[in-house]
Image (cartoon, rainbow, N blue to C red):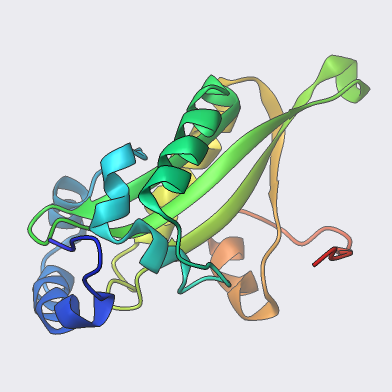
Length: 178
């Protein structure tokens, strides 16, 4: 298990062995082995931040900062959900994603689910974990009455999302403040 201050690299070899053995099992074994669940405050010590660093710029976060942000997001209830998949053998978070619900005036005061921050550990790719995370988040949005879910992705990930039932619509624009 990763502890605070322990680097992700020190557990990479062990992680790869465990995950390679999982790749040789059938998908129903993976379904039983890797369950999607909501983020817990203890997941910081299981490599959650290090996993996010595989996706985007993500500075280190102190335990206090993590707990404060976790409590803030938890207070939003089902309007903001972060889910994870943990490799129980390693005590390591190996996939994550989030969805937040936007409440609108259009479409009869409809709701839209925004899927964000989908990442699977580089050693766990190919195990259909991204698809499991997306399915969990999409179903959550549907269960909360959203008329659609949307996400942004890189051109290199477009094919993956299309295989998961998403289609390209229009273009994304961004303006950074930092």
